[in-house]
Length: 261
Image (spheres, one colour):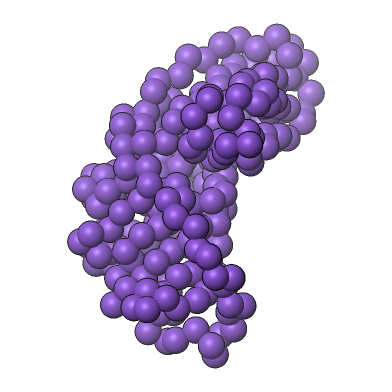
């Protein structure tokens, strides 16, 4: 279970970075297919292709040696963890859209949206992944220098008939603010056993490489209902839930931004 909480977020974060560390003062121009230089679009498309082909060396070649994020993700972590993330999926596809862009000196600053979809497992135990994120990406001299994720959500399903879950969590909370997490199974539970767990952890180098274990519990209701309180320090956190029944399981991870009032 610990491994699945890691891979549910690493694949997206690996392609599109960490937490914001600077604010771009000028508004980004609206991108059009003809306006974005081909050399910059080639980096975006090339990274999608390399990741979809699970070509680790090709993926890493798109990153500058000085590549940085605000939350501790490094090229070494990518090198070690991406093969683990890709392994369960026979087919996986990354698709990135450039929503807005601007040039600042030698830097091309892109606001992007990325979708990842993958299928794998076996005929009697299929596995799927679907993730969506929004990020700011900085490209210089054809290499990705920095990437900062703003929104991120990933869902993994395992088994022939995994639970259908209605998931509710805010994307942003203020420091010290109370918030709620709801993960409600839509199918009738009846007499079936339902196990579940929730995890909340800061995003940093340690959790990328060594996420905290979670403890499954027998649920008396048809889902997970939690009240939490944001920490006093701003930052980004991964909030994850797992729901398991005899026919399958679902694992959902969403990035929660904790901001100052």
